[in-house]
Image (cartoon, rainbow, N blue to C red; front, side):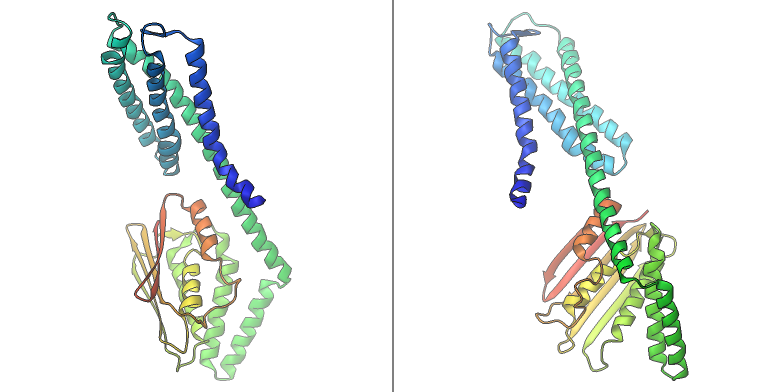
Length: 350
């Protein structure tokens, strides 16, 4: 029932629009007999009204469903105003040209000047433009509030899950430090290094992620620690290779934390099988504050990577986060090619 209700809900908006335009057209046609030179008793009045309404619909839907959503999210207000002015003027000129040169001939041989048609159509078009702007801004605000609510709910859910564990992170860090010290005295440098990197992973997740943005260098360092800790689980005889390459400046640009790790977790989860050759290639490039991130992994039917269903945020949640944090500033692409699964994230950094 819930799915059916949601399925029906998406049709309500177009149905309401059709009803409003239809009722408006009917009322104008029924209760008016003349608009300028257009008279009901001397020509195809219904066609003249229909043409005018069609032009108004072009103004409304181009503004409300394309220009405002696109340029408002990009915060290009001046560009938006310029395009609205050009668009309104162009459509008004076209409508006035058709009215003056063609439609009015069906009604009267004595017509008003072109400037009168242009002024009238411009006035009506401007009113429609204001309605479209109001509609788009209200809709944009409602969508933003929903996205903020989703993000807040996910954050609260994460915090509640952490609180339920009833383990103080300082306690965990102290335990890890003790284990690190003991591993050094036991002459186990690899174990000590693994414990140190695990502590770094936890410290980053607990403290660094409280900031809205972190240096790209820190996010990459966290990624390397994660890979190195995972490699402790791999035997020397296992045919598993994980390669990470970085290019460009990573120190001066910032990124929202924990955006890259889900891709790598996903690659390990589905792309590692110690019984078969497994390859994961990760490339990170920052070019003029544009991040190009690509993860390629072999595809296996049976995997022995990260099987924990709760590991990471997951790609679905990541897409929601990106929609909120980087609206219209990112693209995600996933595909299968020659036995490899490829994930690509392009991101415009601040």
